[in-house]
Structures are given as C-alpha cells and as structure tokens.
Image (tube, rainbow, N blue to C red; front, side, top):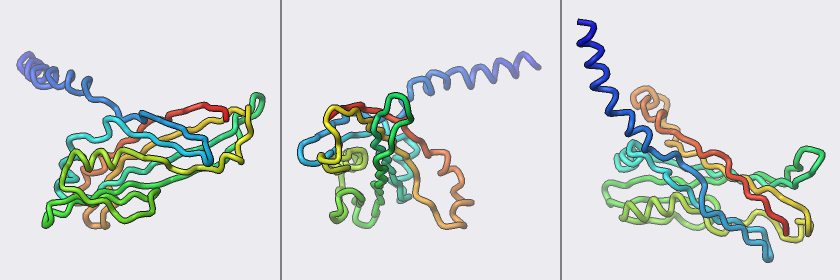
Length: 185
C-alpha cells in the first residue's frame, strides 16, 4: 500500500518539475539611457506575463505593472546619494463588449491606448519609452551615477468582497529584480 502511494506521488509530481524549471522569471531588459538635454530612460520587461495573468486579463480583471526607477550618485566611501525616485503604472483592462484592451500609462500623460490585438497590448504594457528623469544640467560630468529599475507585476486591488472570492489572484503577483545601470555623463 505504501509503495503504491509513493509510486503514485512520484508519477504525478515528477513530470511537473521540468515545467517549473522552464518558466522564466520576469526581468528588466533593453535599457537605453539618453543624456542629451534631459536624462531619459527607455526599457522593457521580458517574460512579464504568466499564463494565469493572461487568463485573468482576458477575463476582465484589471492588471497593473508598477515601474520604480531610482537615480543615485555613486560615492566611494559613503553610501550613494539618492537623487530621485519615480513610480509610474501601466494598467490594462479588457472590455469584452468592445473586444478591446484599454492600456493607461502614467508616464505619458496622454489618453489610454486601445487595441484589439493581445500581442500589441503585451508590448505596450511592458515597454517604457523616453521617460524623463532629470535635467542633464543636474548631473556632474565625470561623476558616476546608478540608475536602478524594478517592475512590480500585480493584479489591481479588488473590492473587499471579491478579494475573498478571488483569493487565488494574489498568487499571480510577481516582481522583477533590481536592474542597475551605471553611467557617467
């Protein structure tokens, strides 16, 4: 009896192990820092969407990606000097009546982007382009700076009652690690 139980458990769980090993963690990628008139940054998030997150979006659950960007002046014998922290969100909501995705991006300040294409929605949600961080004059030439970027991939906070009914949604929340880019103007 015990042998049968062990064989059953191994037969069920061993095939699942390689699937979890193949899953990629989300990460910040394609970072471009432009230091002409202003300090601007562009980047994207790779492997941001899980199957569960995609299903949640298609079922109409709002999902938000919060991007955190920190700029610090590197000091050799002291801790780095914080120069600023920027937080902005990309939020997607699927409208099943219109069969389209509405994406709001805080950093652009323009109206929501709308698309019917799921792949295009994913591209808009994961890309940040030319986000203004500081005036170039505020940066000292020859001084080293660290630009740190992180993304929090979350479902939007649901009303109180729905948090209990859809408790499993919180398990889909993931974060990228901090990406650090050192540069000198």
